[in-house]
Length: 593
Image 1 (tube, one colour):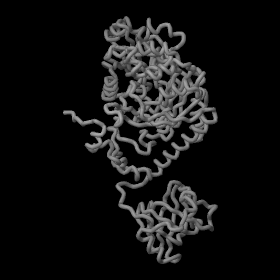
Image 2 (cartoon, one colour):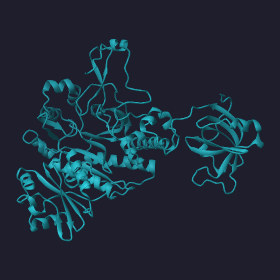
Image 3 (cartoon, one colour):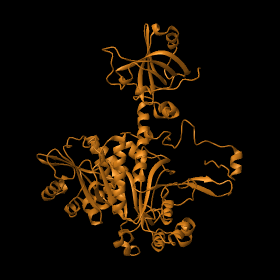
Image 4 (cartoon, helix red, strand yellow):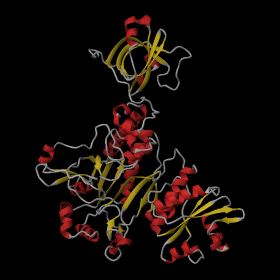
């Protein structure tokens, strides 16, 4: 293999334009493809900026031409040559450099390459495990390079916007204290403090608040976070958030900054102008109309409450649920009366996944209702239901009856499935919506105690604070989520800045004084030294980028992601470690089973 010597790149492959015709360039990159056309050899040379066609002509140098015969895909080469206009009729309009070619006069082979396990092209049919094992090859594909360059532009736009708005970029610790924030912590044993552990941060939440106590007023960070939870397409064990916190603000102030930030990010990355302010829904409105607290508002198909219509009906399932305080809701799948029994069974199976005990259905025809439940409802009840869901012949009405939470979850998921299946979702739309006024607490039936809907540092609504002890489940919080196309891309709240209120919330969560001090003593101490009202938000950078790039998984916008089993096929992490290392940490491995 040859060295660069005194050669230096003068242009990127994708930057060779008609303006350079007649001049000489020095290019370096990877061989995408070599084509031998008798006397002439054509090489598509690739770098991060794109492709350019390089021509090796024996008349321009027999030695160089002979050397080019040995080139193979993914060889790394450097060439010097003259930029020329492509002969008429050979232009490639789909290529940025399709109007020019480089006539090679010199060639250096800097590195050869094994035959890659898959083609370095956008359309790759290799399985994800193979692509992740050879991630360094996968990342050569133009589609992934484009995604990661967009990631850079988004982060750069975020830093510019926030810095220009008076925010200071800070850092918070990666090795911190284990605190209960919802998911499992990743723990790191301490060699210097045997038997003690750090935790990798699930978020920098506590440090954000400490910085407000410290008087930094407005700060942000683009930070890695870690959660040891079950994975799916929009989750990774390590992910990136854009976190910001502000003092002396209310919810509208934080929302305005977040909207401005998102607008800048979309403008910088995609050239898309976002219309602000974004729409807002209360939590009750979101789950009531769409079934989910992260509603996809790009299409209608809303849930309708028909409990009052059926509570005294002859259909025992509906009547019993209504009498026990449950709800009955309906969803009108327009023009879907032709669904087969198999398709209806699929909907019922989906309902069961989310806790539904069944799914009643009605096909609306010109003659009336076609359904097993039709005979149990009067003409008047059927007409009132038709009016409530705006039913017409050809429609399919789906019903769920259960506790409110179950019904909303069931029909909310079915709504999304129908939206995709029926083509109701506009592909190029970016629909943002704020969801506000979340409950402060939920009741965990398994643990028989209250748990925080968001996190235990969220401030209650001023007008609901008096209900903290008398009716905790009626207390609304100053929390807000930002939803894009049915995906939660961020969340935040106004924080509790009064130590007494914070201690009261800890108590309602079943945390005694000693436990609270053991877990959050440093925060409680800080709150006693003059704390400004403050609030903030965390935006999920990976999820935003996945939506921007229309990727199926956030793995396509992260340079080195893990599989759904939190494993890295390339580095083979996690892995076993040497016994000596375990001994230094006072640890031993006990294998289950």
